[in-house]
Amino acid sequence: MLNLNSTIDLDLKKFWRWWRRELGNWVPEKIRQLISDKQGFIIVRPEAGQLILSYLYKGQLEPLAVLDRNEAGQSAYQALLGKDERLAKAQVVVRLTDREVIHKELVLPAAAKENLQQVIAYELDRYTPFKAEQIYFAAKALEDTNEPGQIKAILILTTREILDALYADIKAIGLVPLLIDYEGAANDFEQDDDYYNLLPEWLREKSARTPKLIVVGLLATVFLLLVTAMVLPVWLESQAVEALQEKIDEVEPEAKKVKAMQLEIDELIEQTQLLIAEKTARPPVVIMLNALSSLIKDDTSLTYAQYSEGHIQMQGESPAASGLIGVLEASDFFANARFVSPVTQDKVTGLERFQITVDVTKPPAVESESESEQGEPIKGAEPDTAAEEPSEPEANTTEPSDNTQQTGGSNDTTGQ
Image (cartoon, rainbow, N blue to C red; front, top):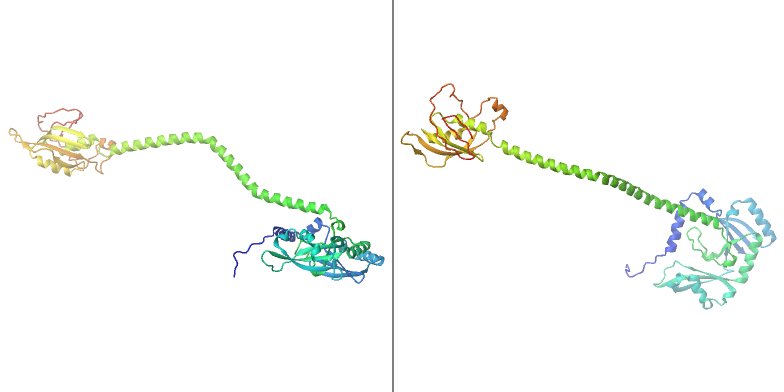
């Protein structure tokens, strides 16, 4: 069953070692050889007064030779170096056996993992029968399943007498050990960079600083390139935006002026269109009066006519005033003709006195004013025959008023 209360053990150092190793695998072999002059490991295993040499590279262990721990062994090793060029670049690892090593598994609090070597050093007398000045020791955390809050570790130790004598023989042959470990808990050089080492600090080989500086320089260069690759496009884009903003700031005042002028032009166009629409909503007054004059017969006279806001109000006398309603309605220029007062009859002349109001409309067939002035016929208006058949003029009376258009005679219309 899944335990949601368990803690997550995140080892950043281990992750960093793994990440560095994986990145190193992507580096071409030739470049790695240029960065580091070390390649492979010479594994030295003591056995019955002799040293058994093997070559370890990429997980493959190759036997080399068995050397005596004396001057003969030194001569044999020098001859081996002359035959195999790989050995000059290899690092030396001394791997002790059960004859030289005492080991013991320990269960410690999980907090001791960060400083495992120091924690065991404080209580070394509890775990071994030796005093601290008599032995060399190392500790390594194990990956076994542990109880919550605890870790397992292996304590490996050897006496100083054994290790010092072995180190002196190996140095006499011409080998300089990088580290000393135990074959029962051997360091994994391919998968683990966190090595334990029984060799004390003062006996360890001093590593050259140049390869490390090269690696640090390469890592710094890669980091700078990555930062540049991320930052440079953003910086270039910001520069382009700033350049565009400067150009916008330069033309913005002119653009505002143009926009203000465009608004004024649009307003003028709108007002002009309103005036044109209002003007063209009804026919010109000349055409309207001409149509009215053509519709009214000679036996009908107007004593008063007023045109205002699309309406004509007229007064006059006619033998049949009711017939005027139909005549006006039949015209395309007029609509909604109606009496505004009762029709009365003049006792002297016998004509009917009327007062009519009619709405003025614009017929679709009305042409432009210029075409009308050229004498084209107007729809809804009867031909004027007064010029062909002259008749006696009738007396007209005009009742003038302000802002009115008046008519006199049977079909002769004038406006003031």
